[in-house]
Image 1: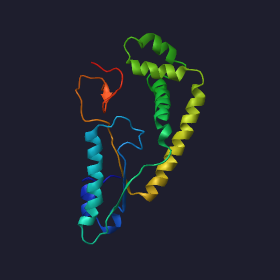
Image 2 (image 1 turned 45 degrees about the vertical axis):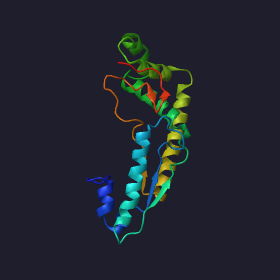
Image 3 (image 1 turned 90 degrees about the horizontal axis):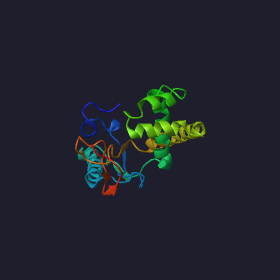
Image 4 (image 1 turned 90 degrees about the vertical axis):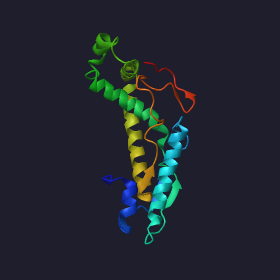
Length: 185
């Protein structure tokens, strides 16, 4: 449960027993997050440093160990996400596997291309096996994250790749200087 007034306030004012002893941070999970904007990366580093120093600012507390680290086994995260999302799109939007073909026939002209792609992926050959493999990989990543958090009290990382962009864009066309495909209004 996150503290009501934010982690920095909590670290500065909590008792020594609940202050973080180890803060891990990563701006890109070892390169797995491509295109992190320099301003976002700088904000992650500043936040981690603030949390690392906040405990030491109190004379009665030892310094917090600050480590650039992240849970192991995240290499499959993007594919796991896409596979699980395709399954959820099929169940939530199209009404399940048996109804997805008729949904595609009726709504292909009014549905975002990204959603259509996910629905087609979920209808593809071998998707059930891919879904089972994705769920097993998700469980392994979850176990690795729990093990990581037994060693580190906090993990500071980006929750977005870039600062705000124009609202009329459906999604950004480039991340951190790398072209990302389409976009537009």
